[in-house]
Length: 500
Image (cartoon, rainbow, N blue to C red; front, side):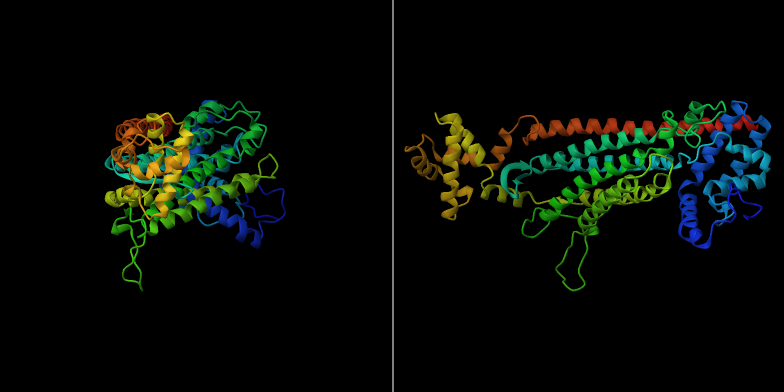
């Protein structure tokens, strides 16, 4: 038989066994005590306030329970003690403390119509989401500061890792911040899914008591309650959505790290991080290793794996309250939060310390042929040739230049006309100035001034737009946090009014 002090195991003839306790029950208890203690205390407070307001428990008993919860919160998680197999669950350990402080007749009523599982993972997840959103906004702002500083820093860009067209560091940074702006929206959407209250759903069919689900959701800062009571206990998208949103964001960040990591090589020589973020070598005295980019790339892989783990934990499970949903999907989710948060902090500091070699970038842009699309465009606009024919002439010209060990800076009208004679059988009415202006990297950037292009005036415009968006996004995060704070103040005020 189970011990006389057991909670909820009367159906069973034995307490949890040693192996079951050591491998499952005790680790789960310690995890929940570490992560959920305050959340369960606050949930219990809100539930008791609702029970009093709906006359499901006498006010005097509610006051006694609320005072015991206040004392327990002051004492902290340690007050729950070590895992006790007789109490089995985390929330049962807290109930036992409340029974000892009051009576079973009083504390036992905290279970009236009660939800198991509690929305504790949702409460922890929404707080972690707000932290990540703040850190993401910090990174976006740092990248915009770099974009502003490097708005005229000309550089080649690549497609298929071959010189493609000319851009600027500022333009490139805006590409990353644009992607991260979408990641912000995905994370906020995940927050909306997470911030639904499941209290009052019972085991899956609600309760026959006149519970006020809307009140308890409001007291805990939720946007409302999840309607279907089966969905309350069975749904797992509140785990999957934040995990997937973080994996998406970390993939973008990893690709960004790979670019800067490559630019940091001696072969490129485009970028250099601050010494305070670099590593050295115990053997090779010349080394300055950009380790942070390696760490962030690896952690991005971890986060992607954790997101997969969340989904794989849930797939092929029954749509009901099961441990896969309630507990095991939470572990990789919280680990993903830890990895993401550390990565955002590390990358923000590292990229803030990074300097870019404008001369090296310009030199590479001048010597390469990444401005050749503009030469073809100018030939098309200033002759009677189609763009495709102009493209063929320039392609032939590049081949001739490469075969003659020439760079783009060496090309003049004579070489272009040799190709024109080959392709169309006649020379073009162009001179060296025409060719040099078309192939000049800085001029290339200036004339590519369409929406979203690399021209400094357009990049400055987009920086302004994105700064305004970040300001709006910071307000949105602060509003979400204020709503949680307001709910906490409401609970405290209701509790004070009741216990005075």
